[in-house]
Image (cartoon, rainbow, N blue to C red; front, side):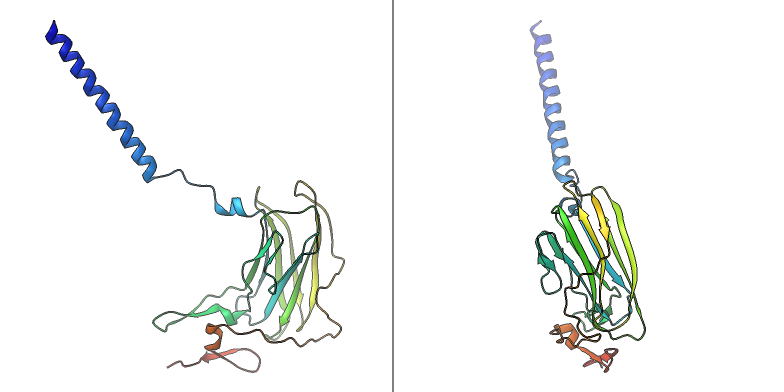
Length: 228
């Protein structure tokens, strides 16, 4: 009788020990493979406005956005209110990078992206500006506005910029308290003094990688400086 009771107690002990090991094993798996977080873009962005033009173009085109409380976002002020400009894209000039071994790599992408971390009720104005015209002919430009949560293309515009210094109002839109667009127009409002058709702007300070480029008078790439 005593032997049987001791045997059952030993079996119970082994069973409890097995459960403990299984619990620790499952906990270890959860720590090694944590539950994936929601996309960072879902938490940090409500809207995106993208400006895109020919990836091979040397033209320098900028996006400008004004919010309802008169914060103006541009390459000169890349963080304005709840808006942020990811990069001041100068065209093909800053698409070339040099690797540590001296190899030149070109990433053909001409795009500027404005991120909205949130929104204010009221009217927003989106303009584009041809800061420097280096490529012959008109420049096709596409501007798109996306809502991230839930994902939706709100509007898209395709235009042509014809000359140096040209500025155009692409879209004026009004957001309500829920973040829905309630009104749009294309009534012009310019952010840059355009009293002359062709403006002259102060050249932007080149970066280190841009100093390694050799451009002709039209801004076209000849060859990297110091190339063998």
